[in-house]
Length: 82
Image (tube, rainbow, N blue to C red; front, side, top):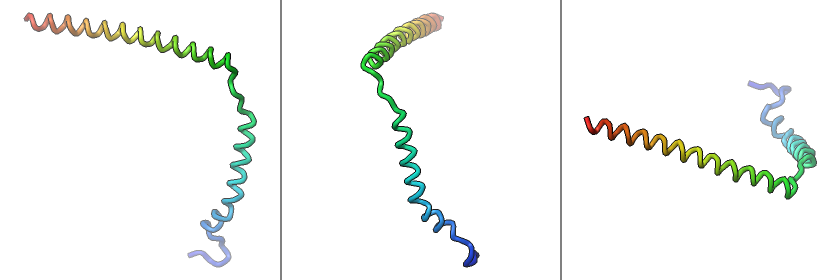
């Protein structure tokens, strides 16, 4: 049981809430000043890299899929002849 001299933790937490909100928004404002947007040239370059990477991975997975499906087909054909 809390005595009259000890502050209630819930009340203390509620009283510090406005200060914590002000501090949070101040920190957000400070961090947002550090944010920079990429230039059009940078966006085009990264987009090109992403598109090329997607096609390379698509080709790689197509080759892997082809190899696995041919291997399974040959194995099933071999096992069905027995």
